[in-house]
Amino acid sequence: MLSLVLLAALVACNPGPAPPPPTASAPSAADVPDPIYEAYDVFVVAGQSNAKGRGTAEEAPEVPAGAAYEATPQGEIRALADPVGGANTGSAWPAFANAYTAATGRGVVIIGMAAGGSAQVHLAGDGPNQTWDVSQSDNLYVRADRKARRALRAAEDELPSVRAAGWLWIQGGTDARRIDDGRLTVGQYEDALHALARRIQQDWGVPMYLWVMGTDSRGDVPAAAEVRRVQNDADALPEVVVVYRDAATFPELGWMEPDNIHWSQPGLNDAGTDGGQAVAMDRLDRLGAGSVDPTTPDYAGDVVIFPNPSEAPRLNAGCPFRYTVTDTLGRRLADGTGAGPTPLPSLPAGVYIAQVEGRAGRPPECTASVTFTVAR
Image (cartoon, rainbow, N blue to C red; front, side, top):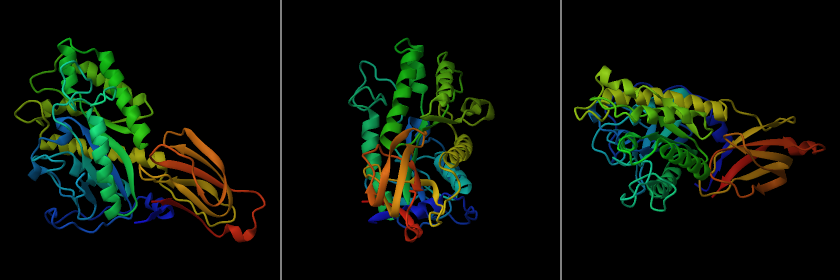
């Protein structure tokens, strides 16, 4: 796959019909189904054990063949079905994929990078790669970022119009206990959470989609309410979108595992379904559900560009044009003019909206087409 034709990616933003309900068991890794969508959105799952999932795989919903995949750093692409991400249990992600694809008409790729028991903030005595604290050199994010990029490249090689779309974050219990023990402050936790979200946006150009932490069936540690407050407040940041807030009600609903800490499969399915719908609405709102026609003489519009994290986008037009590039948060990144193949300046990875206008005085023969590609 030497290039991605972004006009196809634009059309793929239009929500299509949801696939029919599955009637057979999910395909095995040895029988990878062909994709059924024109484009696929990649989500990195991160955080601690409820992100990985500790439910019952047999109670997770089936995913229609070709609608969603799991990608691994080893280069494997397999049909999405629990267990996901190295677990041997059920997760929220089949339900997430079903809700997201139904709402957007785009497929899903899940990359599992969660680490059970991991903390947000590094404390004295923590070993290497035990926390998601980006202020430390040996943090879990750096390792997850490296592995997730390998998995993303594998998905790009196998699936059509792949783009990074978000990091799915479920975490907080370890830090709540550390705050309760007096080893950590709420302010330190908040600063570390915000720093991680900014780093994800900087490196990937996508938001952190956050599921607010749940509770222990035996009762909250006092600091848990403060952690949930910090997580809810993070929704005000441009880099964070809170997509699920109901996990604290799981004990009263009977949606907890016997260990009193982990969500059972009904809870995971609910979190995945509601979270998937919320993420879908955010993606459609950020990118726009419509497409533009760049073939008309009066063409002027927004073009969605989906570069690989490691590649720079390039504009290619049949006539002179001017452009402005912003990121998904609306921040202006670059502008200029061009004619013919025009590489954009060095930009952070992610999804960009490039507004392109034909320049005054262009000859009529230049109005036939404008294409946008990402060269590899």
